Image (tube, rainbow, N blue to C red; front, side):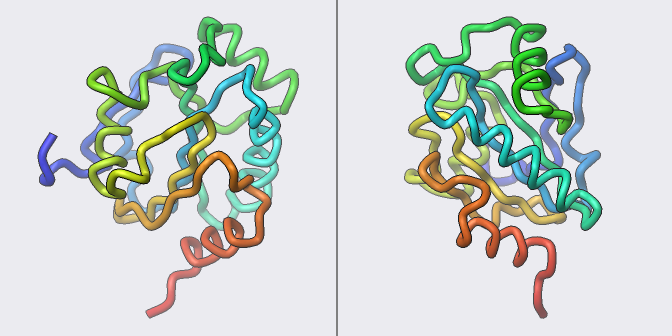
Length: 165
């Protein structure tokens, strides 16, 4: 991919099959999470939705990216994934099409995240969370074990939304 690639140069596909240029998020802090519907961490969808509702007025954008790479925990179609997220967790933040997040077939976004964050930032399970500033720079990442409501996660979001200096 090369270090010259920037987040805002990437394009994804929405859950509805529409192209989404990540440059449309330029200037906004962004939280990206790889998601799955049949995972013990799936309730984090509700916490992501709550964070989106609480902080979007401050500019935070949240994007969910379904993946079936870990234990086959996201086998559904785009329609099934969208319905599950909306009905069970009220998700209305943008959801992208299901992609691979690891290995040679990894989506360019997740290859970029791994390049920026290093080896340990690569998703090892569902619900890895990545914080990106308005300039498109990775500012932090959290594993599945850190829920969106955790104090250290909330502090990182605060720093993202209110950078100093």
